[in-house]
Image 1: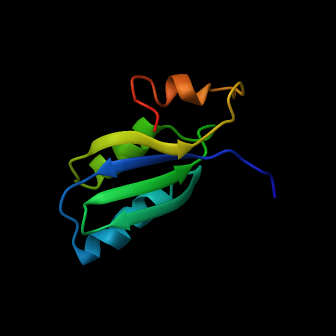
Image 2: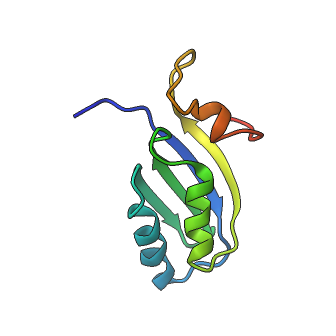
Image 3: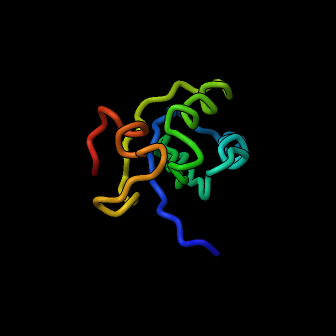
Length: 102
């Protein structure tokens, strides 16, 4: 298996019922580049581990909006490329432009 550098992003999508957990996980897990999805129904938060070479934060956000959720956030929660490393999409500039790194 290839050792890949993943990014982690958190979205707030408001009230999440029990049925929403599976719906959110299915919507995001089906996107090429998504490696893990964690949904916190109590906090209305979704955390996604993804490959920035394969998918961008706006695409993840669009998938949630397409499912009918109001989406806030898109903030990095750590991980990513080692300092001084760039990919063909330069994930830190394209994916997280304007966002504060945590």
